[in-house]
Length: 433
Ligand code: SF4
Image (cartoon, rainbow, N blue to C red; front, side, top):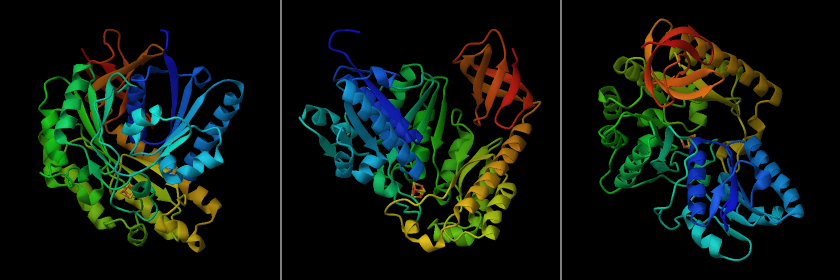
């Protein structure tokens, strides 16, 4: 290691937005002679980039801090905490963990250079901080790049902490995003995923009101052989313009991640979601009618306060009715500041919640297998993403993982693969020369 270089280790918990933030933090720290390392025991600076979507993720972050606190007793170590828990807890973290040096919130990443120049223990969780700058970004993958386009959320679903931890919606300037996409492609990436808590809200806060569809078209028009994805979509914010753009583009992949959260209209209302089951179904139908082989995935919560067994069963039937390809699932977890957390008297019993989650997960498995089986016998375009244990692995345009039998292909190639077998979580196929 060159003289003066130090090592930073970031433990990233939670969503893709956090992973993308960590890439930016690594990049900013590179301007301070810090290089990324994969072993916390070798690091001079350890940071936990936290998630507070569930209590469990929050506890994971605290336990990480505890481990590093012990290491710090043995040798010099700078310890930081950032992300949603940092935003939520702020100064309390400095009090609770006396060995933590730096707390910075979700909107304070670009303040790191100033924070680094300060002496002593610091907490920065202010809203509306300085604007982003042209710092390095050290991306964790070599083929798939995350590209944040909008941060925050204005929806205030009654169970969700995101509007409190990530703030209100803030779109990045389109030209900045397009320039970043160009730079990603120049570096040889083969896939760009546009990220946001609610990507369909993109541009509503900008002067010319550029839409997500506009942005996708601009990126689709860039030169090169690559794919574009986007996530996450709020059901009723998906526009006809977006569906047409996906349908008519060459590079935008046929996948929509559209969290439904519950199959019951009463529960959806209590969740403060702005649609009912019928409306969700109409949106899914419109997408399926227009886009061939589209994958539609979702998120569901089991055991939301006051959810009856009958209402839970409506969630199960929604999977069949809308032929969902896959879903993330979670047992309801009360989060600070959210309205639902106050409905203690309506909480579903923990055992019942666990049972519903297990049933939900079985349903996801069933749907995933059913969705994968549709492709047996078909030839699909696959981006080869890795080579492990003598097998190539890649993804189809509609985001199915494929294990490929082949000799003369390379990671980074787009290849045609004849699908020979389907399992719950992946497809198997042979490279068709
Ligand atoms: S739309 Fe998503 S991020 Fe926004 S409040 Fe609802 S669940 Fe949270």
